[in-house]
Image 1 (cartoon, rainbow, N blue to C red):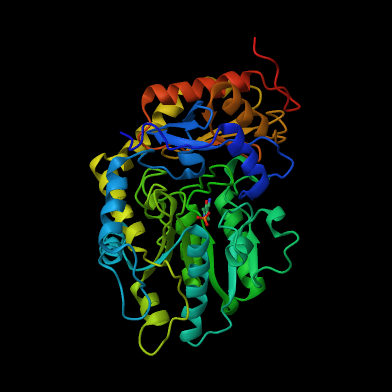
Image 2: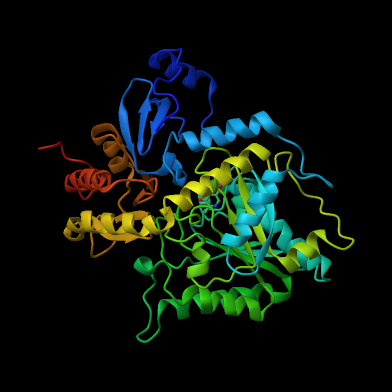
Length: 458
Ligand code: PMP
């Protein structure tokens, strides 16, 4: 069900595209690209542009977001109701609004045991900033002010503000902006498909744990505040760690008094098959950051959950927490989040996520013997198809052309992350829609050459 069957578009598509070129700076935009596409309407997994072209969105609003699908009247009504009651009031000092309190209570109930205090942000980057600050503050207040280092991983995506951007492990993001956050170290991601050649008998987790232990020794445990990681890495191309990776990392960090921050911005709220993915991977994080699926994208909102003791240390006793955003705990955003979680619950979307993954697994099985498909990775309703020039050498083959062809020819919105094609559809996606997306992906990949070029359609 959608609110507006006929969107109130008052300009032509050409006018909007021209306007776009003239005034809008896009996030993550390549300036050389001339093409623009103005989106005006959505319903379920379908979206329409200003030219009336219908696209199948298997990327959750293009950005891992739309858990409950587009155009849900329930969420529009929740927002309207709250705006008509109390749209906003600050959460600073003694104040709070009822919606933020009820949402905090709900999040604590859904979160892994021990994460009992909630701080609200506007999105993921702010959440990561907050988590890093809280980790440093925690040690500071406990008399260990030298614990400032943060360990992150290569190819991690944690946001693009200065602090979160420094934790992000894509080298290009650090160029041209001067110094980032000092004291951030990177270790290898858990990427079984691209594991280094190991001596017989040594497994990947052993290697990664040795590397992490070496990094801790080098920096000095007494200088390290926290390690941050996505339970399953999203932007790196759906990297699923070995089952013993997080439990062993957790154990090593605990031995050294280093906090563990789970970045659940992508993985939370059913995306990879659980309310909190860190809970099923044995992370036992001290801090968890969520955003995206929290509101299914209907309002900008993120949250940071911390252990009671951390909350008490950074904001209890005589500590004054010098940190906060005007819109922390925004009443309307929180009301929308509560209504969204109601829908996720009622429609059992967390469980459905695994089913969606199974549909994709079956529908994508024919890709298994394609010469340019290195690996297909599925975690809940999240799919990564890693493309290679050659399956023997595993030389990466960039996925951009495949994503473009999917969009322009098949009208399917997926995304390319380097050499991995990613899908993360609304969890309400139907089996026929999964089949349609999978068949489109298979068709395009069947035309892929070793240099990344696409042959014409036969
Ligand atoms: N962490 C992860 C794992 C993400 O994928 C993202 C965004 N894709 C962020 C943090 C940053 O979130 P935001 O874009 O809302 O600032």
